Length: 516
Image 1: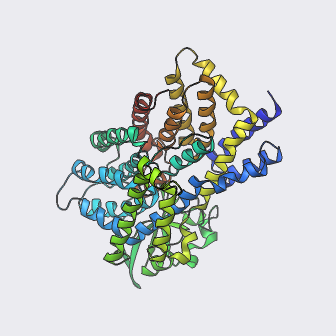
Image 2: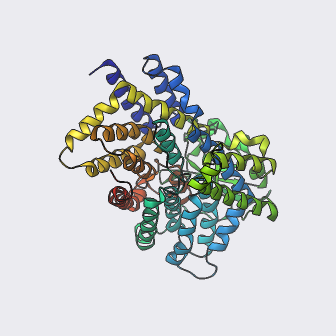
Image 3: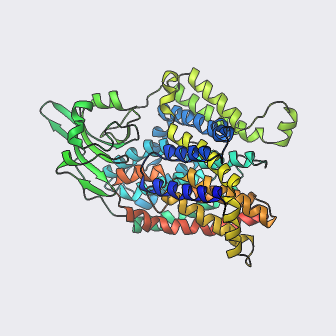
């Protein structure tokens, strides 16, 4: 074993442990590892920063802005309100109306704003109709994941893998190519949730409060917020931070990993991902509703659309034109008609973002606020880590080991091995980091076997997005955990069968759709 191989293996193990222990933000952990590789001369400065100029990474950044524009238009909130049944209904009928539409929407929009918008509306609707909100919030998160595996833009992971494919010199995936498998996963997943989620999920939370509380000074609303990475009180005691002085709201509860804390709150340390139940008036939402320090999960009252009907329609039309343009632009006849212009997803996402900014569908002066920079840094560093695994020989070494273990069973068993490895990393760390670790292995395995790498690329997209068994692997799971008061075991109970279903469908269908 060479020094480079040993150094990279130790660094990768340390990276996985740091990510699993949540020592820092994922972007900083990956960046630290990349800097180590630079110091050890495993990466050149050019290789270190190549990911920051990758089209896939920039496309993800622009899609954050487009998703924000659609969110601020209010069109999604109006849609879900019309979807939810009015009057007496059942969990099954409500899920039947909700889940397919949520999956369809999340195939084209960032999953996080979809869940942030829908979760409080669904929760309030469930309480009004005497149904347990816990029967809807985990299925909501899973439905967005189903949609994400159906298109190239459904999740940032797909765009990361796409960027790596192109960097490796192969032809990238088309807009709906992943749907050849993703649509079957989505259908099977929705059927599974309709049949079993009601039985597997808890009936109600044990910490329900009254929806509204009043004090002598006037009406206060019960507001639920999840603490984001930019909240200034992370790792500080609530009493030392003095939340009420900073934000003008009183903390009534802290929820963490399915546990609710109501006594001795001043002694509790605040953690990223904690859900706080606040008592606050309208001024809190006006001042902090758009802050990156919080994710607003529930406001205690209905909110009106933020834009005029004309702008809501414009946001929707722009989104449809973007999707249609990217799809048509991939057709051979269009490529031959416009040989000097690459009419791909990057082109149409860029054009749509600029139009939305100039039409004030999202505040152009605050555009940097709506981009999740940690995700972008994670993605950019993922490209560098993947390159380091190839440069050092780690990818070839691990690939030889995996091939040696399954030498007599053929490439389909190796496909299963790549799925399992990627999926385990996704559940323990992050989906983009999982893709970064799995991609060079897939490339080396296919090269050593002398088969097409495309089935392995597709299986990484499916496995890296299929985070069902833990709340930590996917941000939407973390959001609904706080909003629904779920325990870690709730995700394992309902999510593990979904991981198995996704695995079986992927391993059976991918070799049929993309031949070795």
